[in-house]
Every structure is written in structure tokens, then in C-alpha cells.
Image: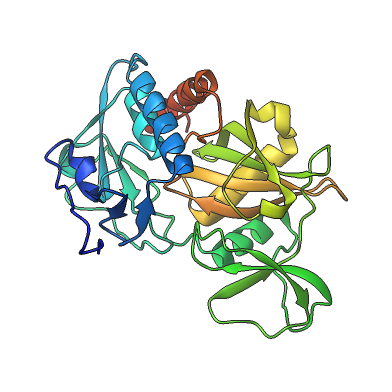
Length: 318
């Protein structure tokens, strides 16, 4: 709920604007009740997003067109799939029964949603097998695909570990010393030394996957002191083969299959000590492209993903 002492402006504009209550000093997200103040950093981020939003409208959609439906929630413009699907030539179908592609879309850690019925016999179903993106599920899928463990038992492990929430996108990780009693709702993982070349920054390899294939990679760098936050100092766009070996790309594909992830972003870390990859997070409703990426590369990434998504949705990627 918003602050009762502050005027709230109800909007009659695009439907997605009605997801918020707009006050004089901040806005409130209706679904979660979270309040976001109009700080300089927030205003800067929102301005950067709107520049991308309007520029992305200039991408000529691919043809011939196809229809897509999202269920149980409709994807809003700040989710990456919104711009990608549009550029791929998808037109929104409000009724899944009339859609060529039906995508399970719910911004939640657990989403056991069955495909709606009736559907076209030829409809492409996306992400209905991905019902759990909790940290425990991610760690299990990682171990299945890569053959090594990420999760640890904090009661018997000796040394440092990462403690974080099971819930997706919490950004509340912290380093703890083990052995330590496990806390409810928390998971424990080995510490990955993902510092970049200058040792002052950590480096996340945000890999956007479509049908199990990495379509593009956002190299996200931030200070070591902010390693668990989503405030990036620098973001670079790279093609998958510039970052990963063929074997590593196959392992990432195996991870997405184990998790049931047809579309989504996975956070990959490369350990400085042994050079091995570790997947620490997965998101099937990822936002983006990252705010700190320059606008030309945001548009380039959108086109790269649109090409991959169209191939997968239309069957060419199978």
C-alpha cells in the first residue's frame, strides 16, 4: 500500500502503467506493495530504460508474423522477452487458444502452471517445464549438468561459504564462516572467486538462453564490495563463442534442460582458481537488457535474441 498522506495518481494510460501507484515522492508496485522513491539513481535508470524502450520500437519486426500468448501473467515492457518477441515478429494474442506460441510467464520463484486448454495442436509451449527456480533447484540442475557440486552443508563445511535466500532475485547474499547452523529459507554454496583482471571487480557472465542455446552474453562487472548486488559498474555484450568453449556451451544447455528452462537468463561465474564454470542463478522472467549497457549494444542484443527466439518458436531451432 502507498503512504496514505501522499496523493496517488491513478493513470488511464497503457495497461502496464496501471501496475503502479504514482505519488509525489515515489511509486508503489501494486502486486508486491514495494515502494520505490524517486532518487537520482532511480530516475537515471528509468530514463535509460525509456531511451531503450522507444529505440526498440524502431526495430523492424521480422516477417511473417506469428502470435504469442503469455500466461498466467502478461509480460510487461521492462521484461526482456517483450522487446525480443516484438522484434522476432510476434503479435500478442490475448487468448492462448489462438496463439502459435504460449509462454508460461510468472515472475515468481515457484510457478507450477499447467498449459491452458484448449490450445492449437501445433502450439509451441515455452517454460511450462520450469516450475522451480529456487537456489536449491538451480544447484541441483547445475550438479546434474556439470557433475560437480555448488551447494554445501554449512554444518560440516569448514571455511567460507555464501549464504543467500532461496527466493529468486533477492540479491541478499553474504559471506559466512562455516561450520554454522543452517537458517530457515537460506541456502549455502561454495564461494566462487570471480574477480576480473584488475581484482577490484567481480565478473558475472549473464547468459541469455533460448531453447538451451546461449544467444548472447552480458559481462557484468561491479566492485567486490557489491558482489551480491545488481548495481553494475560496466556491462559488455559478447557473442557466446567469445566467452565459452563448445564443451561449456553444451554443459549450459544441459543445465537448462535439467531445469526445464526454454527461455531465460542464467548467471555464470568463472572461478579464477580453476577456470571452471559455476551457475549460481537462473531467471525465466529476466529484465533487460542491463541498464548499464550502452544503447547500441542493447539494440544489438535484442536483435540477436530475436533471431534465436524466432528460430526456436517457429521450429527452426529444434
